[in-house]
Amino acid sequence: MLKYSFVILLITFHLFAANSVSASEPDIYGSDSYYLIAQDNPAFAKTDVVRDKWEKHKFNGLPRYDKIVWVQTDFDLPKSYKQPLGVIVSVLGSFDAYWDGEFIGSNGVVGNTKSSEVPGVIDKIILLPMHLVGEGEHTLSLRISSQHNKSELPYSSFSTLITNYEVLLQLPYKRASLPLIMTSALVLFAVYALVIYFTSHPRASYLIFSALCFSILLLIFAESWRGLNPYTYDWQIPRLQIVLVLSCIISLLFSSFFAWFFEQTNLSRIRWLTIALVGQAFVLLMVDGYDNRSLYVFLIGIVCAGGFCIQAIMQKQDNAKLMLGGLLLFTAPIFINSYSYMDQYFFLSFSALIGMMLYILAKNMSNKQQELSDSKITAARLELELVKRNLQPHFILNTLTAVEEWIEESPQTAVNFIQALADEFRCMAALSAQSIVMLKDEIQLCNSHLEVMSYRTNTRFSMVTKVENINTSIPPGIILTLIENAMSHNKYVEGKIEFTLEQSIKNGTQTISFFAPVIEALSNKRHLANKNNSTNNGINLGIGGQYIRARLSESFGKQWQINEVLNNDIWEVKIQMLIKGNNMVDATLSGSPKAKHLRETTW
Image (cartoon, rainbow, N blue to C red; front, side):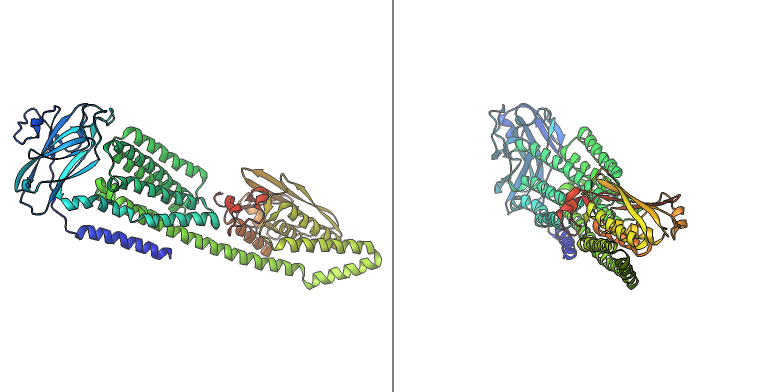
């Protein structure tokens, strides 16, 4: 379903692009310069004004004055029009407008002081008189005051153009329609990611993705505010500040998403996110203009996200190349038209990129669920193999023979052995059906097994435990499996054999260390000696090692480690896994919110 939604999103993008190219454009007339005089004289509304003392400016801003100014600009219409024409004036100020000396409308109330001026709307559309739009040169005169602009603002935006009046009325809605059409999809994406995070797959990348979608929604509304609900010009700077803040947040969230989407070290994440923050601070302090700063902070987020992608490509992580390609396509329109990128292309291209990101997230989730399912099946199969091994005919036969002898020679020993065997089976039955158990229950199972084996082999087996928190949780049977492996690969003679179990806890991680004496070298002693102090994903000791790997993968995904060392006559195995006290019990990756802490640590 998500794949088809992504395809539909791309088709919609291309349809809008094709429509914008093929649609017939109306005639638009503008001017590249205007004339300004910082005086207030009603005669300046006329067309026969001598402009010797007027300042000529390009349409790249209107100088700020604390008094009323007059502006004139000329338009050359190549033909007469039967349909009504209109003029749109966008300026941070209030004004009275005159066309060829005739008053055509006001925008707010012009005043010499802040109290006397009533701010006008940011974009004012005025209908031109039909009898004054004939072929030839025409003059637009504006009496302007901008008392509500900030004093530190030397220039304010200023533009004007003439075209079909109906087109001007529709222009704000057409400009807003492209980003607004994506709002439903963004809401769907955000809610979907949020539901996934809280119900079945609580990875930080899903939460960041949802926050990113909601932030883009806020940015769409902030950008569309100007066209859909025209505001007075004194709100323009606060709106631009809101847009800039949202741009910074989105840029940081965008970088953070890639930081947690790929498996990276915390040091790498901190380094790139620090670059993003420092870059944003530099742009905010050194670059002028709200539009330029908004664009540059976005580019900083893209650069940092690209850095994560390149790093993931070097690490040969899945979907890294696809993500990098999506980033390049997203930024391509900047090189086509950087001026109109934020207004025309950003939301469509960003929505397409968001759709691709969500598709990859869903694909990864599906793959991880399949891996989890396979791990559970493997663990169940290996668990059955272990149970079968412990219940093999020779085990039952030897047990019954020993019991028979003890009944004749030492009935109390027989009773004690039967009780110990029952305790082991009782513990095994209670723990085998669970995916995660308390450490104290695992230790109890091991002690029961050691007591049974002590009776069977005439060797006094015991295990010394040195733990910091006995209520932490581990997958069931992994310590028992280590004990069985140690016994099956050694020929322990009569006497006393002591195993050691140690637990250390640091930064939310527990390390379980198991020590076993080596009487006769393990079957793979040379293999272990060659990789002294090395890290791998499991112990290569047959079915037991496979069972441990499957159980750890089922509960922790890839977030676990095993070190095994053969040091003199001691075999040491260290298992690292995450920890969360009692709340870990019965929490699995398949859906419990209690397992959030299993998600994001990278070893």
